[in-house]
Image (cartoon, rainbow, N blue to C red; front, side, top):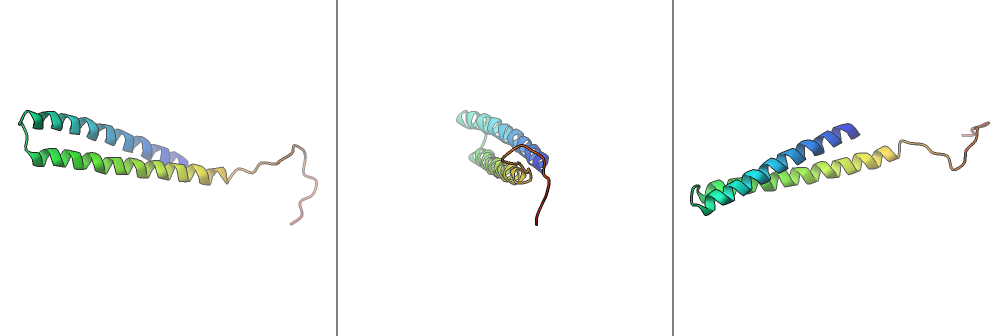
Amino acid sequence: QLQNAEGAVKAAQSAYELAETNAKRYRELYAQQAISKLQLDQAENQLNATSAQLQQAQASLNLSSNQNSYTNLTAPDTGIITAFNI
């Protein structure tokens, strides 16, 4: 599950970077009056959506990492267990 969350973060990061690049290009094109305001707004909305997806993936990774930390049993002292009373 932790590996899946890490993969989701990488995919979301990649999608965010692409949306960020596209939004920057669209801003430049809009400044040159080469595209409509609607096209710029769509690029900005895509950037916002991928940003939210990235944040969600990072939160999922943090949760998975936290849950994974509870699966490891560590003893406060070194030694051999001779009896285990339940």
